[in-house]
Amino acid sequence: MSVCKLTLSAGAAAASELQLPIRRLKSQRWRGTKAFVVRRGFTVPDNSTARLSSTALPFRQSRKWRTSVKASSEEEHKQDSSSASKKEEISTSEAPDASAESSSSDSKESSEQAVEEENVALGSPLPGVKSSSEGVRLPKEVIDSLRDQVFGFDTFFVTGQEPYEAGVLFKGNLRGEPGKSFTKLEKRLQDKFGDQYKLFLLTNPADDRPVAVVVQKESLEPQPGVVPEWLAAAAFGLVCLGTILLRNAPTLQLALLTNNADPALITEGLIGGAITAAVLLAHEAGHFYAAKEVGAKLSVPYFIPSWQLGSFGAITRITSIIRNRSGLLKVAAAGPLTGAVAGLSIVLAGLLLSPGDGQGIIVDAGAFHDSLLIGGLAKLILGDKLQEGAKVAVNPIVLSAWAGLLINAINSIPVGELDGGRIIQAIWGRKVWSRVTGIAVGLLGLTGIFNDVALYWVVLIVFLQRGPITPQSDELTVPDEKDLALGVAVLLLGLLIYLPYPWAFSYVLPPLA
Image (cartoon, rainbow, N blue to C red; front, side):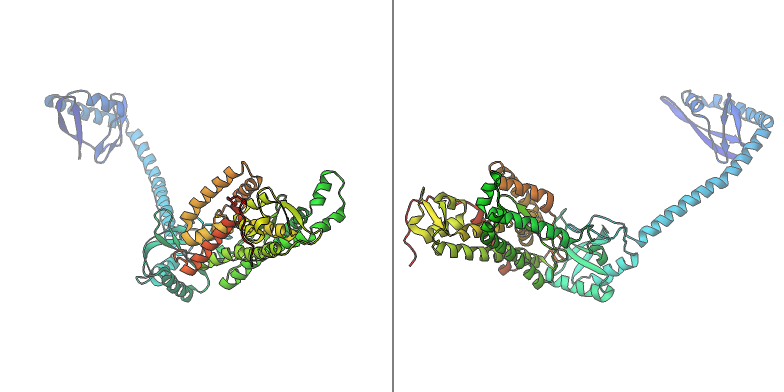
């Protein structure tokens, strides 16, 4: 015989604890409702429990109630023995199913836990990298080797880890200079796993603390496009060549407006078009030369046609991982710097050379207010010939090279994946780059109300060049002072070219000796 405690509470009255001796009954009926009795408990339906709980039972009455319950239980047991047997069979038959379901659930949970222990799930991708592998996971033994054998107290002390696409992100404390620590970690990773994995030292945007990311190298390989890259680039290049020639052939432009165009007039723009194209090609050559020096790979340049300038320059993607921010700065700055040297050389030559008979172009002096640098050079070289309201004859190569310089400088705007944006990220990091990009896009949008070229640039940036920039392996090492000076000089040079000349040409400067 087992004992069950039933606690009955009644309002403000003290609770009475009743010791109810019961037999090992499988079921019984009490006041017309079923009550299932287990081995060490007595359970009644909710409605019956509510009635009992709301009734205050004195101790003597409870003894009578206990006796009646016992007698009723014995009588009910004799009447419903067959029913109890059936319920016992049913409960017995259901027990294996419940245990089987429980064991199945436990085994499923244990298997899932084992999988989680063996692998790390996918997480957020690296910025600017489209992974070519789906569902790649690092085994647990690899993660343990990375944490215990590659990282260490002398380089990067790991304090935690999180899932990352095709790899794992390690949180911790960086020891020593980032560049030296990265070199040690890279060597240990190479010695342990060969070329199977790629290491990144980045800044966590959430707390600005350094993190280490290790991903499978094959996941960083770009996927081939549907159309071959060279074919699409050639198509863009041909269209861009036509707009550049048309831009340098004003007679042909007028003929097109009057529906009296002669295709032979395109020859008028050959020299000017060649000069503008030469500045653009010098820009791209600077990129490829610097990329070769730092061991980076670039895509085929996509030249973007423009009705206003002939071209908006070229979109050249970085298709490999650059080692550090200094390398990114060199690649980004080399293009605008080389293009500026080529364009300025031709502009100076055109200003110094007097236009031949019938070869010069008559322009208003106010046109030189469009560029701070070009206007200053023109005033310095032309002297008293350049005065407000005056007409000036200049060599046509000046305007063609000026157009190339403007295209070159617009690519130096510090926004998105333009050269200027890459320079900003290389010098000050991704957080500053993100803020400067937002400000620059806003300013360009406001300028676009008055200038259609600025409006087109906003559209181009938003849809094609807004970023993010391909990550560098070591984004924690700041470029040295020499590289910083180079990047700042390129940004300032771009400002000098596309900002207007604010002073009037009313005074006369002495001519050059």
